[in-house]
Image (tube, rainbow, N blue to C red; front, top):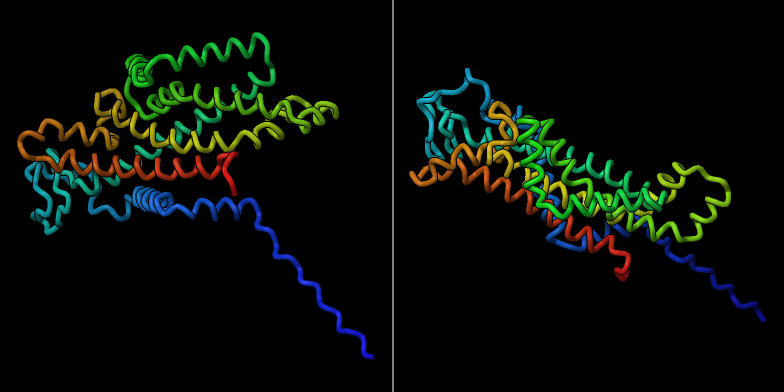
Length: 304
């Protein structure tokens, strides 16, 4: 009798890496992917504004005040078409929006990242130090969060004055507390786990425990907050600029462009404020769509 043929072993399929599982889960939402595509297109257009804009809207040599407040689709004397019309200074609104997006995105992203760095560091330190230091820092966080964000920002800018750097500083001051509270809460949960006790038993230094062990495991909720805070910072900066306390007129953002056309709304020149407002709305909604789904994907209770 012949020996039965051996059945070859079938290797199990390779398991997906955490990064691949994350990308797969994130791509499962069409709304989130649509928001990501819209935001990427807006960011790319803002980055390439000096090369794709029909004109430099803040170069006085390219402006003609006689072509101010032209409706969308008008053609200039030089043959250039103003697809979104012009403002009261004769600036092409499409070009002004692209340049304004550069300021708004820069302020929003820089302020969110700086606030995340400051708030996360203080939150981790408060959770690790404990005692009076933790109590003092958390009472400061509670005190700041009890006041309206826009009120604190207005008070800071009323004292510091206009300017991009001042706006970023004001937004960092009003945003860091949210990161601190979240980082402290996450660090308190992680600090009770065995790997932290093992690191302490091995004599690891406090800075290594904070930033090598605690921080990576506290990142998921902080990433969600950072995404949402970028949209919030863009909206806050637009509000401050609309009120006249944000960026200066020489470096206008979307909020300043909306403010420039507000006085002409009742006279029918709606496009001066409408199109910058539409660009602001699209940017904020796209970022919030990404952040909302990111929260669901990074939820530790989510069933894979």
